[in-house]
Picture 1 (cartoon, protein in one colour):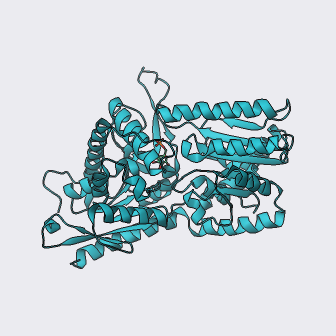
Picture 2 (cartoon, rainbow, N blue to C red):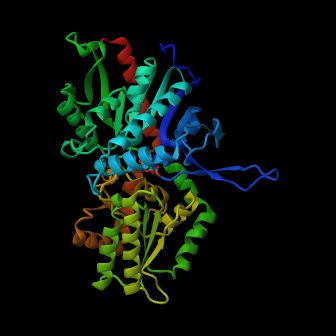
Picture 3 (tube, rainbow, N blue to C red):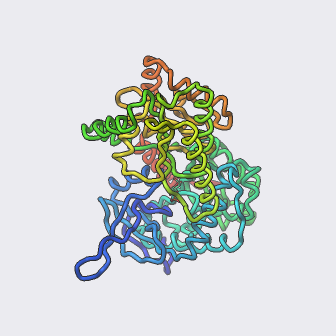
Length: 493
Ligand code: G6P
């Protein structure tokens, strides 16, 4: 039963994530002088993946509306029940820009950038996690399922369990979980594990991530693990009696609504837009495409280096090949991201200065986010898709490209350090640190015969359509509610 002090809500499914599917923007002033609210689709793979489930389930989505110091009443947007959580400007700086994106993000992505460890930002992380847990508890009906998402909210499962032992609690980590040697750097490594172990099921992208997590639990807590099962002592079990709860830590590779992407790609106006894009670029023989948030994990610099060398070596010719790089703005107040932007824009400028001609631009660079329709047109227009991440939880861009190519054409060059590489084996897999290997892979993609392109794309499409996002959420929720039944019915020790 719920504890007396916590209010009980009405939703039987509650999703909790740092970012809501929509960001707030101030709209034009109404005639009476009051501000109007505009809600725009938020960036990132998490939102892309969860939207379909939320639209079909009637659940509530608890999260931050993308602006500081603003309170909003719960509302419905495009069929989704939205419950906004207020964050102050200082909390955003410490919890979001600080602990989440300057500590956990680089740590969990193989320390590609150096993580900062600050005690004040950890305090803010704890405070904000409490607020999200309270908001989720207030939305969840008795016995409801609450599904918490991603690295910003790893303490929420435990906080929820303590406030509301009636709930079934799931957690999904959208980013990698690092090997123990890296994870162990975190001064709050035990607190984070304790927070996560409040969940009944902890989901990861890759088998290796789940393995890293279980290993960290064994090393830091010594709890026994058997395959995907971890026996976690209950608070009563802390003594010698040994009562335990069963927690499942398992990989559930996330996906996209593949059918929706294909449907969009089949629209005549989007195909016309794809043709227009190629024409506007001077109808290059080969159009290559990169689509990323402007993040140091994405290997954008490595990609530009490889492309530049191919031009310099005359293995590619600027008259024939154009690279379109969409780099959508991200976390712009974090220093590492500011430095990255300078670095990438310098590299793009240099490369274009060296190789572009009046009629042909080597890299068409865009520091913008675009609506989904425009992205689909770009995917359709691109002969070669470059995903060169140095580390990435999944990378849904790779799956979107495949879903869109109903024509069976197009070549995907994919980093083995993206989670998607576990499934998309028929892509041209690369190690982006190996510039020579990456250059060979790009050249191979450019000259690949049509028959081989079709054969590979057909196999990739089968993977993506067989394992779409509906299958992902169904599989996670089945494990979660099945797990809870086991929990309730069978004593674990
Ligand atoms: C990744 C993370 C998400 C995050 C998104 C956008 O996909 O896994 O949790 O929402 O990036 O980043 P942002 O910091 O803008 O929310």
